[in-house]
Amino acid sequence: MSLRGMAVAAWLGLLPLMFSLVVPYELDEFHAQNDFSTPYSGIATFAHLNWTNCFDPAADAIFLCLQSMDHGTNPFRSWASVVDCGDIANTPFDKLEALQQLEASWKLIGSRKSLNSQKADHVRFLLFGGDHTIILPALRALYPTWGKVAILHFDSYLDIWDPKQLSGGLTKYSEVTHGSMLYIAHEEGLLVETGNMHLGSRSMLMEEHYNLDNDARCGFTAIRARQIDQISIDGIVKQVSDTAGDSLVYISIDNDSLDPAFAPATGTIEPGGWTTRELLEILNRLSTANLPIIGADIVEFPPVYNNAAETTALTITQIAYELLQWMVRVPVRVAEKTEL
Ligand SMILES: [Mn+2]
Image 1 (cartoon, protein in one colour):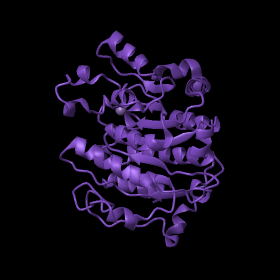
Image 2: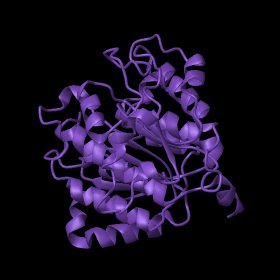
Image 3: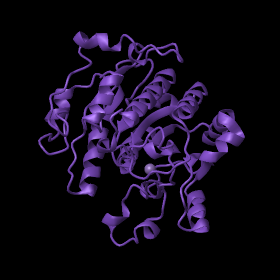
Image 4: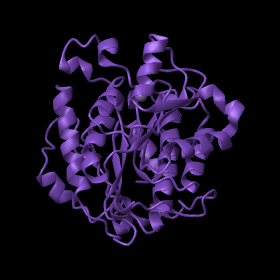
C-alpha cells in the first residue's frame, strides 16, 4: 500500500492495519485459522470494500518513489520483507475477548520465521489502532519471543494509572482501559524494571504523589513535552539511550502525543505537544543510536475524526515510514539477544 494509499485507506476507515517486517507469511493460511466473518474484521475492512494486494509484483510501481531523501534508503527495497497483514479479527462486543483475539493472532504471525535469516530470526510488528489498549495483547504476544522489553511511550498521558484509581476497580472488566494497560503490563512482568520512558508527557494528574510514585514503581521516567526547548533533540536522544541501556525497545506512539495542530484526529486532545518534524527526527536519531526496536504501534486514531485534508492520516503514515526505516536500519535477532 502506498503512503498516499494508506492515507486514503485511513480516511476510508480501513485502519487498524498492521504491517510486519517479515517472513514468508501466508495470508490464506492466516485466514483459514481466523474467523473474518465478523464485523470489524479481515482485510475486507469496516466498509467491506475490496482491497488491493500492494505486494503483488504487478503493483511494484507504487514503491518506486519511496527512496527517502533523509535516509538515503527505501525500506521496501532493502533486506526486509514488509507485509501488510490487514485487519485483525476482533469482536466489537466484548473488549476482553477482543484482546484475546488480538493476542492469539499476533502470536500466530509472530511464530513465522524470517525470510532473511541472516538479518532476522523473527518477525517484528508495526501495529495501527485504534484504542491504545491494543498494546497489552501486543506485549503479551511478544513476551514469549523477546522477553521483557523497555517501552518508549510517546503520549501526552501516562497510561499507567492504577485501575483502582482510574476506574474504581469495580470489576476485572472495568480495570482494562486505554489508561491502565501499561500498569497491567507491568504487573504481569512484561516490562523491564527500569528503562521505560514516557515521552512528550503533559497531561493533568489525578493525584500528584500517588500518580508519579506509581509511575516510578512501574519503572518509568519521563521527558515532558516542554522539556524539548531546554534539552533539545540531542538531549532527548541521549537521555532515552542512556535510560533504555541494552534493553530491547518497543515504541508506542499515541496520536495525542503530537500537538493537535499536526494530529487533530484523536480522542483525548492535549495542546502543547511536539511537532511532526520533531517527532520524526527523534525517531530517526534513536534509530541511528542503534536502539534495538522489536515492535511498534501508532494508536488512538479514529478515522471518523480525520479532516478533509487527511492531516492526521498523513502524519501517521509519515511516522510509520520512519519506524520502518528504523526497523530496517537496526536488525534484531532473538539469538543474539539470548547470548547477551
Ligand atoms: Mn495513550
